[in-house]
Length: 301
Image (cartoon, rainbow, N blue to C red; front, top):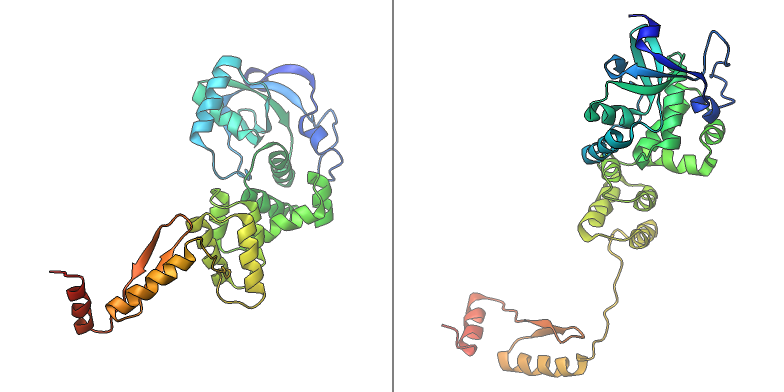
């Protein structure tokens, strides 16, 4: 099949990625032999997925919703691909639209067609997705790391390229120093970026995991986690901040009851009560004989 049969060109040059990453040293200039953004209708079955795709998880319910929207309204924004040969294209960006289009049963999909080598494709895919997709914090951090290591960018250049301050880029990259379990929890929205940034300040990985599990179990706020981290940083091994006991409105009466019960049972009785009047009574014993003595007092049989 020839290019003319496989791609129905709409004509004209679009802005697409060329505008998004204008000024990139690795982006080829828009010459006649290297079109930047030719818009065409491409058969869905001739498109390969992007091996450089930074997003690792797609919510199935969200894809189904997007597919239904596409059935009704069609594709509003074209995907971006590069042409490998006359019958094969490879995604640069827009995998959610591509996957949803397949679910919707489309035979063709509108696309910007670019020529790009592997390095250019990696950079375009990462930057496009960081800019336009709702990636989770770990996916963003991994994308930043790949741009630094595989595209030979410096942090200053990376910040300029993605439109972020260097400190923002640094904060994301620091997430990759957390233990894998915590990174997974952040990826799966079990904890927030604020929780993760607080955990980074704990030097010991075991303590990081200990506090992380407390966050999940006790549904701790970011502010509470920051308080815990401060205690750890001050050399306190106990990760639970000291809580000063509060005097309830029944305190005086409870003390009297406690004293009378202690006299009655011949052992120190501990009575606790909150401001609503709820509480507990603890009766300690030192041996089986002592327990039997207390049970006799209670007329227990």
